[in-house]
Length: 396
Image (cartoon, rainbow, N blue to C red; front, top):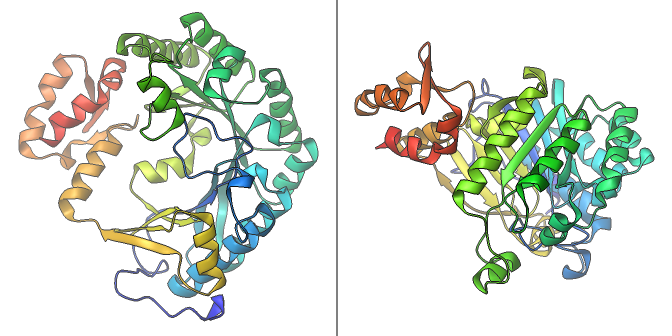
């Protein structure tokens, strides 16, 4: 079957053009390639020599475009307000291929006016020429995976870029005309001192970013890093040290004019917030393209087959890459809304809570875990450090 001959929606498959069309709608494109697979990473990523024929970087853009064509034929058109290329390292593909994928999204689904288009990138995977192609092709935002400015910390994380090259990559992005530049950091790496983390923050701030993400390192089961921890080869810092590093990040980033808008994200102002990620946190709608990519539309959630070769084989055969899915019931949607919106600086509306949960709000305020801003509950810095515990109180 030709990819353009996919039948219209069947049971459990919503029409993107009519289902909840008032909600923001985005597209996530997963690019599963990395030059080196970092030991701490549990994302669906592969180095080039791990994949067989049919899942190569040379053919990937065409495969992803097949899925976009399928989605448009199956679900119809709907204005796309955000597009996010993640991975993996999307910039392992030629810039021209990334632009071709974006063009297919526009042609088949339709990009809204003022669309935000982000790509993740490693600092060593871009050139002035590649960035110029991306910007001319419609990309507006780039997020550099810096993680740390300290060589021994990067070595522990198995990151391969030279931190001395980061300012150059950021400068190239600015010169290419990117509207927003974001920097991603990780704290809590074994062996990272408090001064190491301060150095990373200082150097990130010196780049003049519009946006910074700072996430605590999490040991994910099944990763090489988890095996090292289990064998005692590396020792994770205790919770108090990790909390102190979060506080330092919030203090320094705030002083530099970057305000928190989500637990682990700071932006220069409202226009610099990652609109695509906000779409996730507000449980809006998105279509996932690529192996293992998840989609969420109008109370339905589904995900693709995980391995790139299986993903490519299905699409070449004219079949859907969908692996499985679920309908989100009212109780699950309620719990997820509390979990996600509590993370946001805009806070959680009190009308979201049950009567019993609302009764716990004064106690949360008295314990300096939250404040009330009108009819919305907003976490304090202390509350952000204990966000999971606050959510449990609001859900129970």
